Image (cartoon, rainbow, N blue to C red; front, side):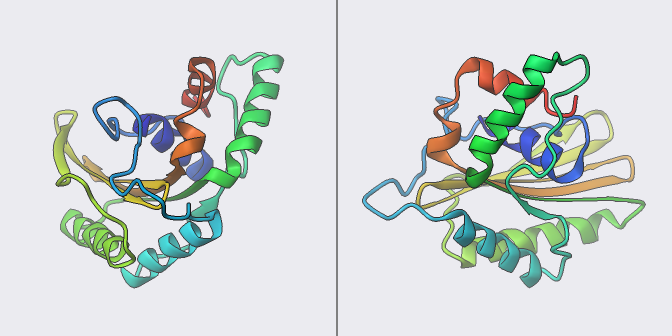
Amino acid sequence: MRNLALRAGRAAAAGVSACVLAGCGTASGKTAPADAGPKTVLTQKAVLADVKAAIASAGLSRQEITAGFPDPKPGRGASAEQGRKVESLTRELSPCHVSWVAERTGDDPAAGQRDFEAVLEAIEARGWTEPRPAEDMPLGSHGTVLRSTYHKQGWSIHAQHAENSGWIQSSAVATRNSCFDGLTEEEQALLERLDD
């Protein structure tokens, strides 16, 4: 599920073909929050405010932040029917989705990682909890990816920072758990093909 959310977020925010390496939020593949309980589920507006505040706190541009799926593309080779299904599904999921994606090339990798860690600290400062330590993994033969998931009142933020041969991408994709965990296999396949 986390891979789906990240792929959809990157396609929606940046209009590119595929998301970098990602994994599932929990062992079951669901994004069940660590703070499950009687709390009120956050609104998209509140989540958007948290993401904007975290990015601004880290001194980064907020221009790459989007709510929903502003321009979904069904992927190469998709039929007209698949295109209609993607449009309908993304319209239905738009209130459940916030994304920030920033890509750079030729930048200082250490500075990029420091900026991303500042974003994570700012997310935590706004009450989001990280149930497990962040994962730092190899990406191809020349890169690395740092992944982390945070939870708050029915939403999950899937954050990652990837570096590979001078290319740097940082992202934070927030999804409402009840929306994305209820997707059918067909719907997941449609979203995974976004902008392929």
